[in-house]
Amino acid sequence: MARCYIVGAGEFCGRGLAPAAGDLVIAADGGYRYLQGLGIMPHVLLGDFDSLGEPPALPGVELIRHPVRKDDTDTGLALSVGWERGYRDFALYGCGGGRIDHLLANFQSMGRYAGMGAAVQLVDSGYTAYAVSGGRLTLPPAERGTLVSVFCHGSCARGVTLRGLSYPLENGELTCDWPLGVSNAYEAEQPTVEVKEGTLLVVAGCGERT
Image (cartoon, rainbow, N blue to C red; front, top):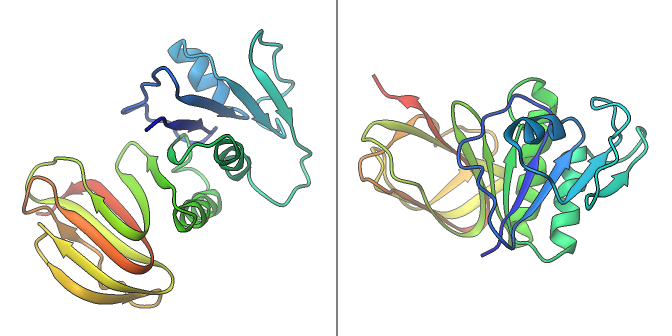
């Protein structure tokens, strides 16, 4: 499946950032600087440009300018562009760390698009976060003991099954006000997380249990 890579202006980790033919690369405002440093030319440069300043004129790069006063974040606007162009697999970079309100906004946007049927992940230096709605997520290979936390995104998530983790769960229920799924850990090489109803936010690779 072709992937839409979105690069924002937050703290950056380039793990797994390897666009191929058919993928879409969107620079969200100051995220362009990270791509520039990697020698990757985006297909789209968008935002209100409060962090990048006046955007450069780049041959072959589509420029989408938004006002500073708007009802969505630059990351959210980039997700909407990718969605409208048919992409259903999204990887967000430069969208974690820094301002906690922006991170929470990005998690909300991930949950929204997961609920619409997209696969969405956010790559940060210390973890990768995934949103999964009404489906199954197979986590990437990692060492035994690697931490995984599973949170309900929304009021309730039902039919939650966790396999290959230290604390398994079968057809359980998670709610937004009780962090039952925090601080789990890999037991198998590739654990799975499944939810039948609702949306989960899964944070993986954030260290090892001691």
